[in-house]
Image (cartoon, rainbow, N blue to C red; front, side):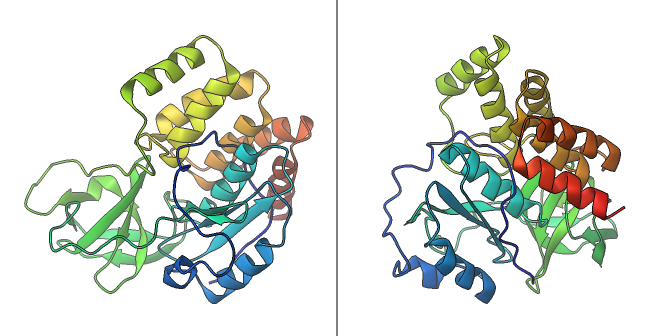
Amino acid sequence: MVTVTRHARVATVLVLLSGCAAVPGADDPRLAEANLTPGSREDFRSYLGRPAPKAFAVAPTTGQSWHAWGYPTAAETQQVALSGCEALGNPCELFAIDDEIIWRGTPTVSTEPTRPQARATSTVNLRRGPGTSHAVIGSLAAGSEVEPGTVSGSWTSVTLADGRTGWVASRFLEPVGTAGAPLTPVTTGARLAPDQLAALRRRAEGGDVDAQLDLGNRYTHGIGVERDLVEARLWLTAAADQGSPLAAYELGLMYEFGRGVEADAAEARRWYAIGAREGHAPSRERAAALAGSG
């Protein structure tokens, strides 16, 4: 696996990961526990020497990483790291903020399943990412049992019995023993209390661009709420229409990688151009990458 560690991505308003006890620096014992590729471990050592604000995100299923630094705010830096990591095709989480590791560590293994196993209802393609624009990397035979993970729009990440991971269309999965029941979406971090979410939504509905951006990114990454890319696109569009380059960039990623929408390179370029006009460096980078790919 190639580990990418460039600047890349957009915003996230979050204090929800605060309060996690952590030991700063490369001697944190959780560094040995984490499922990081050798390249990601090397990248983390170089990351520790970067100036703050900075953030390091990892994909727990693959160990790939993406880190960001040098952005104006901690919130934007964290979102750049998260979205850049998820552009590699797997769900990601923040591993470190500045020099503090916030990853909670490997959960204790329980003999009781924490979520339902799922089975394929028919033969279905296994893809590298959530959408038909991603390469087919295998297939599931009808009746194959898998462990479902993150839900992204109409796609679900799964882990096969042999340890391989990939994405399948959710409509071809059902929980074992509960035919027709929906799979449980994933929520990252502490769930927002109902009154907090209601207050944030009221601000967003009232036209507060920061609240719109916050909601959009929460729903994009499933931070404190269940991941919902339809809601994410609604609030990101509202924020982008008010001039938020971070929201425009996030929408560009959605269309470039087919997250919750059909992949559309022209629409992705349009959103990246809007972000770039506002001086947003990650938007310029993605626009250039798209142009270079033809």
